[in-house]
Image (cartoon, rainbow, N blue to C red; front, top):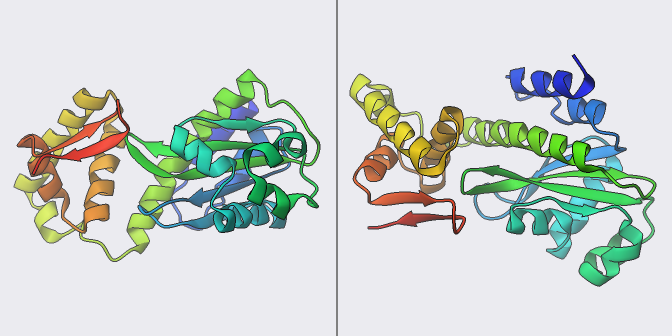
Length: 236
């Protein structure tokens, strides 16, 4: 098993909220450090985990400035790659550039954390010296970011006071409805069963409603998830 396969496997098998998500990433991708953050209104804006102080600082500055690669990656739903950050950041993100100009950072690569249309946050990878990430490592980072997305959403829902796991949701009839809605979302978005289920959970979490209620809205066509315009549409 190569380093990337081992990292993907290790990330996929993590279950504890204390597991270090950045460690396997740094073993698979040739960068200096990594930070994982949530961004925006859905889960709030905060650093979930950082491999070192500089990685945490890069997140903090982007939060304070309201701009930077992590914000752009999430807005674009695509990686934002800056192989020579010092040469380009003043043009793209002047407030962010002024705040990190003295830091030893050569390259910064931001990958969005997404589940279907849900925008969760970003994975930032940095190096001390400028460098190109390369097509292979970019694709690998996208795969690892996808796995991280699921962990971040699960952990947020496990620690928050939400209604996504009510006694009503655990009833046999409710589970059938949720299962049917999961299949509906799979067909609608072309995503995996795991991601479809997480998407329903995430929507319940965001609206402080039960999964059964979200499932019923989906099956009745009162709610739809649209990939084309990166939106969740509520028909009510």
